[in-house]
Length: 224
Image: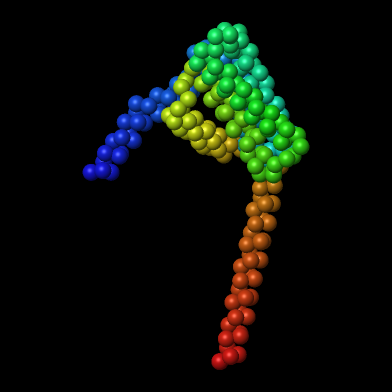
């Protein structure tokens, strides 16, 4: 009975809170024409870059690309501050909604500086740096901040879960998107070469295991 109650609670939470909040995060920027100048370039760039890596499947993000993505996030934070100023959301009264928007812009600006500095000096390992500075984390983060600020969305656990859901769905969508794009001739050759190399390594390991088993058998037979 408890399991049924838990499932009902989860379903009600999804229906009444999480899904509506998720949809609000997606829709909010499109209801404000000033925000369109921010979100449309983000989405277009995201599709172009993912299409590029979908066609050139053997290529990977480099330090220059990571740094460029950090620069983009820096400018988004600056433009968001400009949006707050132009829409009278930053003033001497500092009401809660205005203060919340300003704090979020400062957080986004600070994060962009962290990425800029770490990518410029190669301060982090490639794996971590390229993960946090790749186009999906950077652009989706920017989109979420734009949506929360423009749509005046409350920051609570539902917003956090909805944001995480947006990240996951975006990653899954573009993974499928890249998979559906035919690779270039160069990429196909590189992929085939990689597969041949993996087969050779696999066969070599198999042969090594066979030899070890044979040696073990020989030792056992000698003892007998």
